Length: 243
Image (cartoon, rainbow, N blue to C red; front, side, top):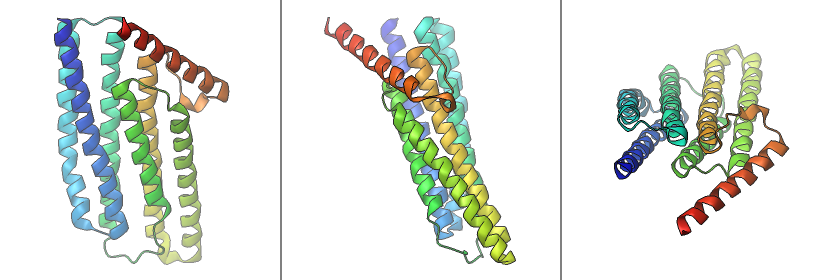
């Protein structure tokens, strides 16, 4: 039974990796489409949303079935129940990529008021943060906590910068109001994507430690304590596997 259970856990992780890869690709393609005003690419992102939605439902059913048939307790139950939140956050990231793609269609005939720099940078950071969070889930490793906090802060700062810069262009020329508003929306979408990726890492934190912490409340002392706990957990796992 334990071998079967471990195989089911491995399969769930593999499927979450596939869902994450689909979501990451939608995100990168949506901003690439915005940058190049590629409406065909934007429409393909919108079309792919149904695949992510289907994967979410499929995984929810699989996890529910494993919980029902295996009767997990303690850490195993925490691990399985937490996957629901990870799946939901991935689906919401895909929805935000669709929102960006819809904005691409709005600006298809517009000459941009400036070259896009901060939006692609925010997208790049959001992708890195998502990859880091999913890797943390797969390996149940929270040792890169400080990087997560720093990356989310950087995305937030870029969103504020995008907002201020677009307002300046809009105030300078009323013809820029529409596209400026669109770019502000896109910045906010990317900031929310960063939040969802951070939510995934917070969920991994809960799986590993049994404690749920809002990373907005983290201070340096808590980060240091968490990293020390991670090292202790890994050392215990190595000692156990060596026996």
